[in-house]
Each structure stands twice: as C-alpha cells, then as structure tokens.
Length: 265
Length: 224
Image (tube, rainbow over all chains, first blue to last red; front, side, top):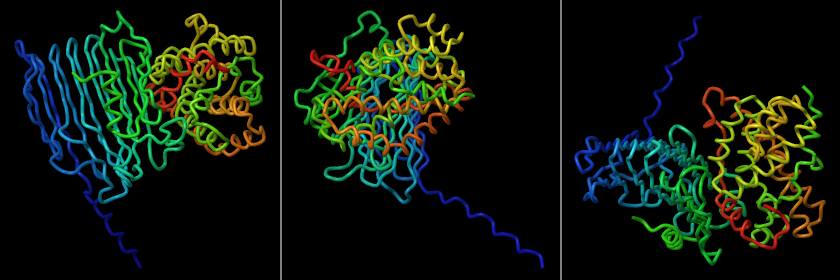
C-alpha cells in the first residue's frame, strides 16, 4: 500500500492589509516639490498648503488601521535642500482585528544635506487587545534638520492598553544618535510600575535634531509641577539633538506639557 | 574559561563604586512611587527589562570582542538622559581601575587610553569579563544582576526594609534575570552580522525623567 500523498499546505490566508505609502520631496527653485506622493491601503496622502519653501503633506486614514495582521509602511525622503512637513488628520487607533497576530507599522524617514523634515502625527492609541509593533527609522545627513513629535495613548478611556512596542532609531551621518525601544501593555514586564509608566496613560516625545545645537547645547530641564498630572524632561543627546520626554495622566495634560517644552511650529 | 571570576566580578564588594548609586531607586522613593517591598519589586522588574537588558546586551557584546568604541556610541544612543550618561561613565571609570588591577589585559589598557574620562560602565564590565576569561552570557548576567542588586540594597537603607524581604525580591526575579541575560547574549551573537542595532534598546520614560530630577536635588543619599 502506498501512502496517500499528503494534501498541499493550505495557502496562508491573506489576513491583514499590506500597504506602503511613499513621499519624496525635492528642491524646485525657491520651493519644495513632491514628485512622489503615492498613497496605498489605509494611507490617503493629501497636499496641504505650502508654508514658505516647505511642502506640507497630510495623511488621511482611508480605513481603520492598523488591525492585527496588517503590514503598514510609510517612506518619506527629503532630498538636498528640500523642506517637508507631514501630519496625520486624525489619531491612529490600533485595534485587535481578525487575528491575535501583531500588526506592524514602519515609518522610514530620510533627510539629505540642508534638508528639513517635520514628522508631526496625531496620537497613536493602543486599544485593548490590540497588538502593534511600530518602528520609526530615521537617517539624517550631517546638515539635515529634524523635528519629530509622537504621542502614545495607552487604552481608550477607562480600558487597559493592548500590546504596544515602539522602536525609534535615529542615525546621523551614519552614526547612531538615538535608539529607544519602549513596550507597554500585556507581556511588557513592569510597564505600569514605578520605573516605566506608573499609571500614566499618555506618553509623548519631541525630538529635535539641528546642527546649530552644536554651538549652543541646551541644559537638561524639567517641566510639570504636579507629578500626578504629568511631568516632562528635556535632555540634550550625545550629538546636536534634544529629546523631550513627557508622561501625563491624559492627552490634555500631555499636550500642555509638550507645548510648554516646545511649541509646535 | 574560568567561571569563578564571575563571582568576583558580580560581588557587591568588588571595589567599583556601585554602593554610592541607587539606580534610580532613591528618586522613586523620594517621589513616593516606591513605598514598600511590592513597589520595589515592580521597580526592579521594569528596570531589569529596560536599562538592565540594554546594559546586559552591551556587556555581552564587549565580552564577545566587539569594538568597544562602537559600543560606546551604541550606549550613548540608548541613554537619552545626560545625568545617566554621566553616571555610567563615572561608574565605568571606577570599574576600569578595579578591573585593570584584577585582570591586567591589553584591551582594558587600550580602552582606558581611548577614554581617559571614563567609558560606559556596561562596556567596561563586558571587557573586564572578557579579560577574566568569562563568556558573553556571564557578562550579561553580571550586568543584569547589577541593574537590580543596586536598587534593592539602596531601598533597604532608604525605606528601612527587612533585608530578608528585599533579598526575596531578588530571588523572585531570578527567572526574569535568566530571560534577560539569555536575550542579551543572543543579541550579542548577532552584532557581528547586524551591527549595534541588533542590541536591545529598552527604554523607560520615568527612569529618564527621574534621573534628571534626582540630579537637581541638593539633599540625597545616593549619587544616582
């Protein structure tokens, strides 16, 4: 008796969205042009009114994302001497979706010599039972400038957060400038304890990279009088950069702290 | 290999200056975030899996022979707080003195010459382990254990905790220590192929905020 051939392995169900949005900004005379502005999946890219020689792009959510199983990616490149500002129109909400599997959301930002890039999305909300791994990978030329502002909300009101891991990696002139991996929610040991979040539900960061900071390195400074409502610290990094880290009870207090430390342009 | 050297290196009596530091525990106690044994345990669990894991990864990579000055850069990128970078270099300088005497070795001399004001403590720890004939996993254990041993000892003094209770905290975290040391050593194996980005980069917002707060306090028992 010959063994019956084993049935072919079932095709992997195509659960989740695969999408990559691409943006490219180039210098065009006294302005910045956007030769590539390619939305995909949940990312609908809109040109906003330019601000002087700075092009502005707003990312609209065309569908609910990220859900478990999604593989999302945004790539933005700013060429020599160009200036680009990117925002999102609404908060990004990580939800559980059809599977327990994690979603990925990878942002890759590159700025060339004498270019500037502002990445200022609305908050990311980690809803209960969601599972998201987010990365933000940034490569800067020595004379490039960066302003990044990111906010994370742990759970919609009154619910625990899902699993959220975010890694922020910044290289300048090919050398590491900042590398941070934060993990919150189930499976992140001690995340809500006295070393990490301690009951705070809104966490924000502002990163400023500017070669001019080499001339005038700022001192570390603290913000927030009421630790229960929130606190923030401005820290000079080992390079021409400052990082503001804020922890607050909610987004309202987080906004106040971040704006006190560095108002938005 | 000489595993007994790990006992010497990880011994709290090794003259490397660690007793003057609380690893952020003093600020957590002062701010009222750590009030008892349970709070200490949660503090240590969070620290172990963030800055403890980072230190263990750097130490394992240095013990594996990766270029220490590249690890210095990786440590800077993983330490946003200037107060914590300063503390790490100060402790690194003291550890380097002790290690050069305990395990004389050309690699320690070269690091001392390249970084006269001090190298990051986990990098020195890993290099000392290498010069003592230890393995990367041993160095990871030493760094991970130190990331919670210091806060526990300090908190016993700060809150007058029962030392038996405090030691039980360390014992309860033993499985976490195993996990962190193994993850760090595994990452260090990938560093030759993937570069320092392979190393853990765990970050704890409150440890950064608290480190700068602590640095501004005039009356404090511990330097960090």
